[in-house]
Image (cartoon, rainbow, N blue to C red; front, top):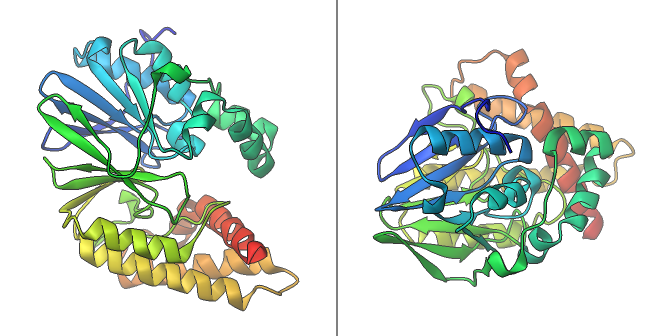
Length: 319
């Protein structure tokens, strides 16, 4: 893999040795991974998709971080925008171990079901374009992290907290040094484009196929029990005001459930759900005095609204 000509991704450097790296999926500001430095060791939390891996490796080189210093690669769950690049990244990091949820580890060792599932949702051509090569990870290099398990990283440690709700194979990563969680999708989506005078806008992500609102509510309780000061979202970046946003996320999940039930038997259920979810998001953006116009907001929301509607439909059909 030649990283000499790879584009360096945009980076936001936070305190406590944490850097947010834009994985440049589809558009800037959509998805990121995190570089966490503790003393002389590094962890990479989330990997993004395979097309972003050369840029991530180029960034390590540009910052003088030897690849042997990367001790862990940690996708929060196996959805491909979070873990699609794991196999390629592990090939390039000879001393790293991949840390995975017990329900997700086997899918990173053998990603054939991940690939088939993504193709069923997006189509074969779209998966090839969006995700590139989805390579397996050697089983001997995988740590299966049980709930509450900790790993040492330099002069600190990271703790893994089982976090169902968005997906059953999801954990969040607690970092005591920063008093923050790396939340994957469990604390929703919050794009910085929408930030306005009313603060950050947060919305649930009910991507197919394991949306479970009751489990998600319990997960939020558990995360808040740590009294986190920050949440490091994959979509996108660090947010504060944790308790306010947690409350808004709970409320939004409840509205999603109500909308799904309202349109459960509608003949044009999918279209009605997409429209209702979009209207719900636009109302919240207006409340928060989002600086973007409606047309731009709709464009940024369109992909997530489509997936959220699909996820709610899967949930309805299972119920």
